[in-house]
Amino acid sequence: MSLHIPFQITIWDDVPTTVVNGTTGTATMRIQQLGHLRIRMIEYSANYLADHWCELGHLVFVLEGELINELKDGATTVMKAGSSYAVSDGLSSHRSRTVGPVKLLVVDGGFLK
Image 1: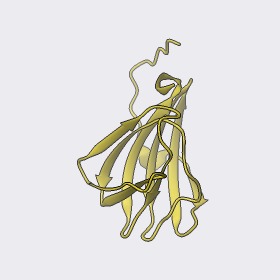
Image 2: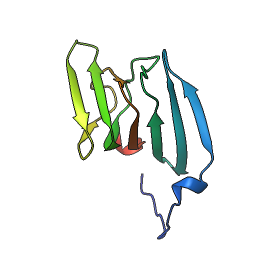
Image 3: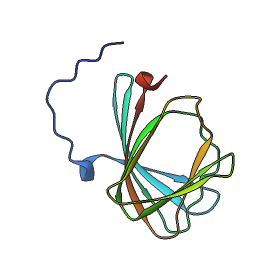
Image 4: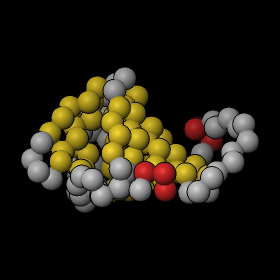
């Protein structure tokens, strides 16, 4: 599953946004799709709660704010700007929650299966 990406620069402010409602709050996403690789700049509003438990793998980098990551088993972690997490597909049920606004860079795709 090789992917050949030539050198390119992304100006995230130029990438169109998609707004997704959570159970509460919103997620504003800018998505770059490169074959099976997806890169997203995501901004969660204050008081955001994801509307689902996610089973997909991600590499998540917290750029601004504090992300509350909940696992279905009840574990909760608070991640501050400058931290990240990694998980492969099917290895945990997780969802995001915020108190204040949060900005993330999320990378996912077939390489996390």
